[in-house]
Amino acid sequence: MAQGNPSSNWFVKILGSAALAGLVAIIALIFQVNSSRNNDRASETEQAYLAIQVAKQETLNALLVEQNQIQSEQITMEARKSTIEGQTPLSTNNPDFALTATAFIVQATQVESTRQAIATKQKGIESTQTAISLPQPTLAIVIRAEDVIPQIKGENGGVQKFVSWWSEVDYGGENGELDPSSPVPNHKCFGMAWNTNQYGYHRLIVFQKPTTFTFAAGGWYVKVCIPDNIVISTEDVGKIQADWLGKRSGIDNQPWQVIVIQ
Image 1 (cartoon, rainbow, N blue to C red):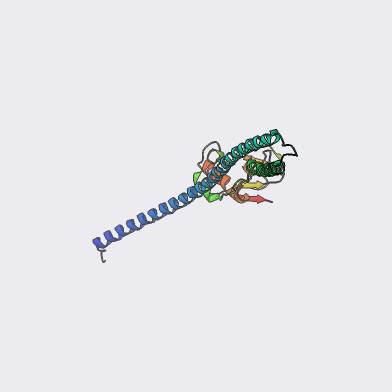
Image 2: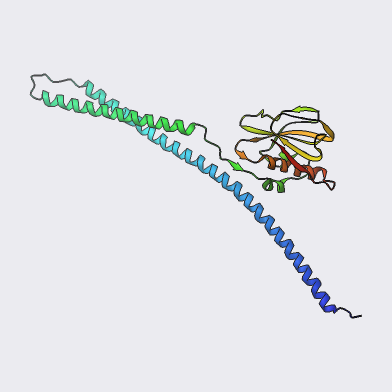
C-alpha cells in the first residue's frame, strides 16, 4: 500500500490552519465593522442634536444683542421726543415761526417713524423667541434588532439593563387578559408573553392590543415601553427579547420563535 508523503501532509495541515485563521480574522473584521457602523450612527444622531442646540443658543444670543440695541434706540427716541415737546414755540409774528414749525413737524415725524420701526423689530424678535422656545420635533432614531442584540447579555434585569430606551413597566405570570396600552406619555408599548398554553414553549408572543393568555410552567409576561422617537418594528422588539431569553435560559435544542399578533 502506498504511503502518503509526510512533507505533503504537513503542508496540507499548515494550509488548513492558515485558512481557518483567515476565516476567524474575516469574521472578527465583519463584527468590528458592524459595531463601528452602529457607533457611527449613534454619534451622528448625537452630533446633529447638539448642532441644533448650539444653533438655537446662537440665535437667542443674537436676539438678545438686537433687543438691547432696540431698548437703547427707544431711550434715545423718547429723549428726542421729550426735547421736542419741551421746546417753547415761537410767536406766530416771529419771521422764523414757519421754519421752526416745519422743523418740529419733521423731527416729530422722524421720531414717530423710528418708534414704529422699533415696535416692528421688537415684535419680530418676540415672534422668533417664541418659535425657538416651542418644543422642537425630536430626531427619529431607527433601530433594528441586529443593532441591539450584540449588546445583550443573559443577565438578570432583562434587556433594559443594556438598552437605555427600553423600559419594562409591567410584568407577571397570572392568567387572564393583558393590556399593553401605554401608561407613559410619548411612548408606545408592547406586550410580550412566552411559554403560554395557547402557543407552547419557546414561543414569544408580541401584541399591542388586549389579549388573553394562560401560562404554562415557566410562562411570563412583560410590558415594554419605548419612546416615540425610536423607530423599531414590532417583530424586532420581539427578536431582542427572544435573544435575551435564549441567552438567559438557553434554547434546549429549540430556538425561540417570535410570533406577532396584529
